[in-house]
Image 1 (cartoon, each protein chain N blue to C red):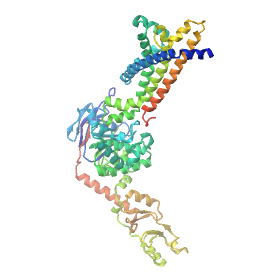
Image 2 (image 1 turned 90 degrees about the vertical axis):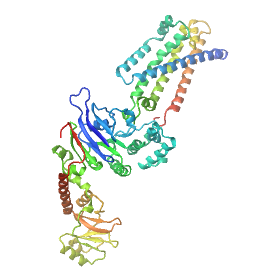
Image 3 (image 1 turned 45 degrees about the vertical axis):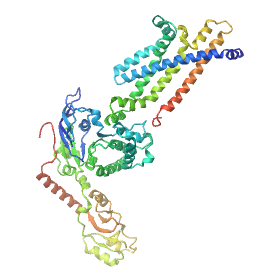
Length: 215
Length: 389
C-alpha cells in the first residue's frame, strides 16, 4: 500500500496527463455519438421498421467485444487516435439512439395532438415540445454511454490509443516486475475517478437543463 | 361562418366511409353541438374543420374562404382547439402555454403578457398566482380552464372543442359549463362542440346536430325544436324518455301563473288562518314573516293544535326566484311539504305560489306552440348528408 501511495506521489503528473487524454477522447466520442445518435433517433422514431433497424444495428455494435473491435479496425484506420474514436463512437450509439427513440415516443399523444391542433408544424413540434420533453431520457442515455466509454476506452491502448489504458496495458505486460501492479492500479484508479466525475457532471447538467415542470 | 360541403372521409382499409358527403352550415357566433353515439363520426367531422384529419373529398369554407387546400398548420393557428385530455405542455409555465400561439404569430412580448393576464382572469384564475405555475401543480378543472384560455389566446373567431369537459368530475364540469356559457355571452365566438352526452348538448348548444351511427345527420335544430319535434325514432330514443323533463330546463318560473293559494301576513290571527284554509281548495296556508318572506306552511290540523305558530307546520324551504327554471321548481315541489313552491323576488319577498298543475299546463302549452311554430316555418339552416333530402 505504501509503495502504491509513493508511486502515486511521484508519478501523479504522468497519470494526470493520461487521465486528461482519456477524458478528452471520451468527450469527443460522446459528442460525435450524441450528434449522430440523436439525429438517427429523430429520423426514425416515427417509423417502426426504420427504428428497429437503427436499434438492431447499433445494438450489434455493442455485442462486439472491445478487444476484437479495436483489432478489426486496424486494417481500416491504422493505429492511434482514429480507430479509438471510431470504436468508442460505435459503442456509444445504442444507449443514445434507444433513449432518444423511447423518450420521443413516450411523449403523451394528447400533447402532440394539441400542439398540432394549435398550428405547430412538424419541426416546431419536435423542437419546442417533443425534444424538451424527451430530454431527460436522452440525457440519461448520453450519461450511460459516457460512463461505459470511460471503461472501454482503457482498451484503446491495444491500438496505441491515448489514455489511462496505456499504463494499464504497460503494467499487464510487465507482470512480475515491481512497478507492474502500481501501473495497473494507478490506471484503474484514474478511470474510476473519471467515471465519478463525469457522472456528477451529468447530474448537474440534468438539473440545470430540465424544466421545473417535468422534474 | 363555417360551411362544410359534401365532406367525406374514407379511412384506408375500411369498406364504409367514416363520414359520407356531410353538408352543414354553422352560423356565426353560435355554439353548435355535434352529438351522437360512439363511432358516429362526430369527432372525425369536427377534426376535418381544422383539417387535423384531411377530408377524402368535399370542401370546407371558413368565413367565406375555401380552406380545403390551404396550409394546414397556418389554418390551425386561426382556430382554437380544446381536447378532452387537455394536453397542456408540462415543461412550460402556464403563461408560456397560453402565450405560445401569439408568440408564433409574432406578437410583441408586452402584448402577449397582457393577453395572458386577461385570459387568466376571464377563465376565473388569478394571474399573479397562476402565470408562473406548471401544469402539474394544477387540478383537472384548473387545467381545462387553461386549455380553454390557451385556445382563445390569439382571439380566433372559431373554436373547436372535443368533449372538453369529459374528463372532469361532474361538479366541476357543471361549473365549467356554466362559466363557459357566461363567457360566450361576452366573446360570442363560433364554436363547434362535440359530446356524447345529450344533456350537455341541450345545455350548451344554440343548435344541436344529432348524428347517427353511420354519420348521417338525423336532426340539426335548436334544442327546443329537437325536444318538441324529434325528427324520427332515432332522435327520440337518443334524447331518451326524459325529453319533456329536459324541456323543463328551457322554461322559467316566470312563465307560469300563480296558484290561488292562501297566503297570510305575519301576525294574522289563528282563527282567520284556519278559515282561509277551509275556504280554499288547498290543504294549507303560507304564513309570511314580518319582512314578507315565506315562513311556514300550516294545515288545519296544525292550526288546531296547541303549539305556537313559530313551531307548528313546516318551514318554507321550497323557494325559487322567477328566473329559476321549471326544472328546478319541479325538483323542489317533489320534495316539498305542501306540493308547491313559493316564488320570491330578489330581496326574498313573497310574490306568489306555483304548484304542479300549473307547471304541467305550461309544458303542454310550450309543446303545442312549438309544434305550430315549426310546422309553419321551414328550417333556416341547411344540413343534410348522403346527397339526399
